Length: 210
Image (tube, rainbow, N blue to C red):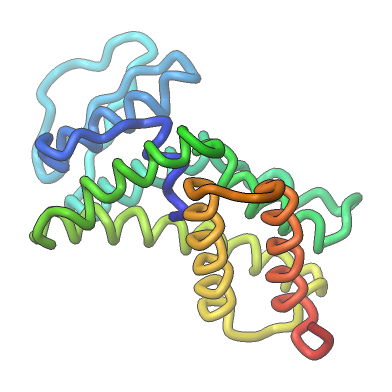
């Protein structure tokens, strides 16, 4: 899945409530800057801000989730590459997609990532909490890919069109490639993955010739 890498880096324990999970994930995401963070949804903190401490207050739980996952993707998946006009748009988009897959690794790492996904979202009954967690991850992943496509459209490298549909296609390809990383392979997984990513990007950038 597109969020395999996130779950590989920030292991989520299924028995923990979603609010506590999100608090923990944001702490981990911001730790690279040396900041600590306090989160609240519909509740005041009442505690004074300490040095190098940031407090966030959100009107709804969904707003909190979206903010956390945006920050997580900022840590794991950078948008800088898509803006580098010194590199062809085709290569930039492939690089952006590749960095989504990279954190989970290949083989044992990828299997552990999929094992975690199965435990979190496939094995349990789809309760409202499970659905919320899944949709939050899916929503941020889709938003990120749509942003990359929008940048290329604004540059003129990608013809205007249905950005959401294009993003869905690329996400589906990423999901399949993420699964392949966890499965046995006769050849080079990464070479095959690279070829597939370029085919998918060509299908988006040049649909008439792909």
